[in-house]
Length: 269
Image (tube, rainbow, N blue to C red; front, side, top):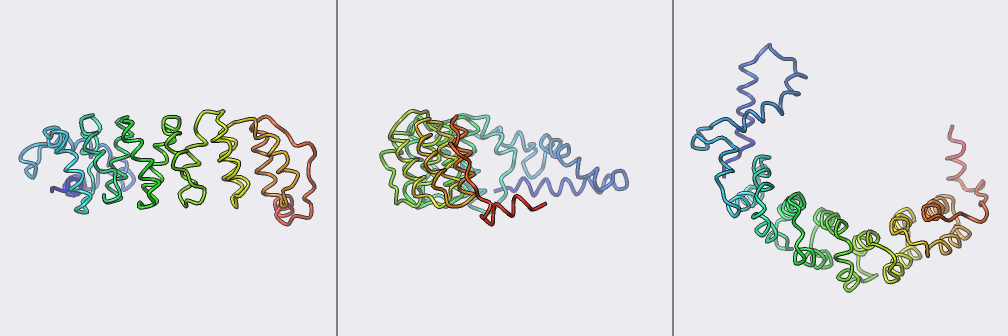
């Protein structure tokens, strides 16, 4: 597999040599994008007289994704020109989707899903497969995060699948809760999951963000009660912010003058 970025490095070094004394170091740094664009249109002997743009334009969808696979599995940097060619060819979607499994190199799976998102491909089968992959616990954190971002964008479409496989003891539950919090209320099943997570949470910032994001006013009395029971200023503040985001307000402000965090924030100046 030809390393296009390595060819560009050679090309740019020659450009620097040909322009010694003409540009400052900062000006040369600013010219990288311009030279890279010029490089993309330049015929190269290493590409049999084709420019990088032409080189990838002559590949079909399957060849483009196979090239992506070879680059990542071979430790070769992925050229922007390859990504551009993949993005311009919607037919690549079915081949990229084949990379979305636990056996695929994680970097390759992340690349593939990011490209699918750019293409705008979100087949029902793919979305269901992503839910199963996320629930499997057999993938790395980088892939989990990209899957979650994808599912958040299609939260209502995958809500039923997530509710079906959701397990409150699953160490991946926070990823699922983030997606559920992005669905359209009201749904008492989703609400109960979010409130259960809130009641058991050790991260009040996160659990409150889910409740305020979901935007279901039924949470107001629960948050009011939590404000009255909060035993430290930071938790109280997070709960109060979530309450206000839903249109509620505390019945009475609490006195946290003896709380060390409150004192530090209040008198830090």
